[in-house]
Amino acid sequence: MDIFKPIQIFADLVTYNWLGISDKYWGDAINFFVYDTIKIGLLLLLINYVMAITRYYFPVEKVRDILSGRKWYGFDYILAGMLGVITPFCSCSSIPLFVGFVGAGIPLGVTFAFLIASPLVNEASLFIFPSIFGIKMTIVYNILGIAISALAGMIIGRLKFEKSVNPAFLKFKTQKEAVAENGGQTVPLKKRLVIWWKDGIRISKSIFPYVLLGVGLGALIHGFVPRSFVEAYLANGSWWTVPLATILGAPLYANSVSVIPIVEAMTNKGVELGTALAFMTATVTLSIPGLLILKKAMDWKLLSAFIIVTMIGIMIIGYFFNIFTF
Image (tube, rainbow, N blue to C red; front, side):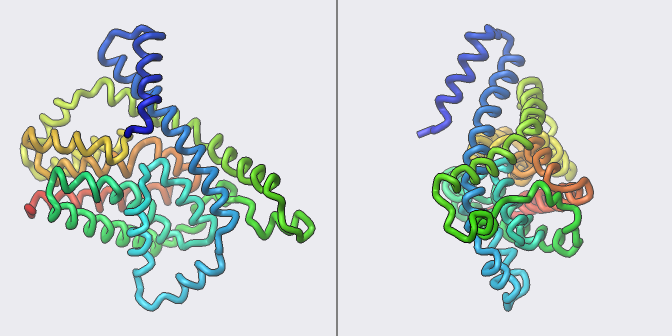
């Protein structure tokens, strides 16, 4: 069951009935814009509210003790990557969780390992991949994705970019602060609901203009850049097809469920599997809406490091699957 089908029906109604658009390219672009704006907006509002509740109760001290007391270096990065597998989010909807982790005091590198892994390895790569590409390739892809997410997080953690994060964007009211403001008494549920709503709506309002801009750019690309154009340049097997696929995929926006059929179509038209996977992973991990939202939480230095490290990881996946077959 597609829970977003009513949104698609509404987008079709707006595009083809109310606006009466008959041109295929403009129709595809406007339809994409209406659909993704509503879908991402609702997801952000819901997830930001849930994350406001999570941040309110988040046991910061316990988590810090667990992370600081680890015996094996890098295990926390791997755990963050594995958490990404079981969180079914696209790049935009995983960002509020990332913000919550940073705001709760989780090390920056660990939060980036989650941020990269969440859209990269998730429910689609677990349950849809096997039926299309086989169980062996699915296992290898997920292991490689978690490893690259953990390694990327380690690199960003070593760069010491903590001062590059915007503290005002990460400021949320904790349970301890709310209780103190309430004279040391337990905060009534009605008041807690208001606190969570204010925190959730604040972050949603601050990032939604960037969602509109990013989805607008993605809609133009979706409507006016035909798939055949992409396939024609990626199907010749040259070494540069993997970087090109990464660059072409990055400006687009899609979740992994919707982009996997595109990967299948590309491979059927002669595009190498690794090249097609590079296109897919760039689309779900480095989308323009996601990057514009991240810019609210950090400066250009940290954002650039994230983009570069992630693109290198994506290209490693691409070259790996072009060289090895499963």
